[in-house]
Amino acid sequence: MKVPFVNLGLQYQSLKEQILEKFDEISERGEYVLSSELREFEENFAKYCGTRFAAGVGNGGDALFFSLIALVGFVNIISALAMIIIDKTRQIGLLKSLGLSKGKLYQVFLIKGLIIGAAGSLGGSLLAVLLALLQNNFKLITVPEDVYFMDFIPIDVNAPDILLISVLASLASVFAALWPTFRSGQIQPADALKYE
Image 1: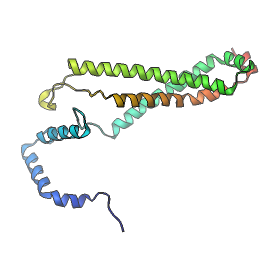
Image 2: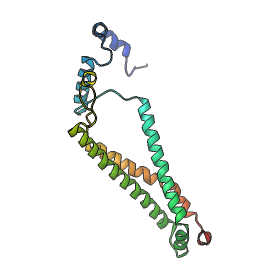
Image 3: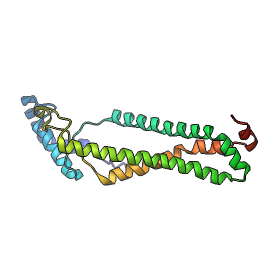
């Protein structure tokens, strides 16, 4: 027996009259994008989500865009640590010849990756909160009120979200540090001491 999770057809039948009535009303007014119904929906959705504002503007392209930005940051961390390892090849060889274990060497570069990620997350979060507070208090970015039903773009500062993003960014930078870290462990002391 197949039990549908969501039966849109059945839901439509029960709401058909209301939907068609509202569709006709909106069509007669010609308010297809920025209508009072949209404003009401955004207000109700904001209340439902527990935020002050809600605006339906995102799509799959936004997620792709932010994923590409994250990928660029990921590659930058890998490149930065790879350059540090190349620059410190002689010192790595010297430390290994003096008995530094691979585990301790890995620990040094993973901690370096964590420091890069934590510093970037902290700096980015502080800058984002500062810009959000400036925008909310001084309305630096304004929009036409007759089009958007507000005269500026409000930014909701949510501490748990900021903390979660900062922790995930720091963990991502540790993950990005894995490849350069394992490359540092493959450096042979004799070759490293000859390295210029």
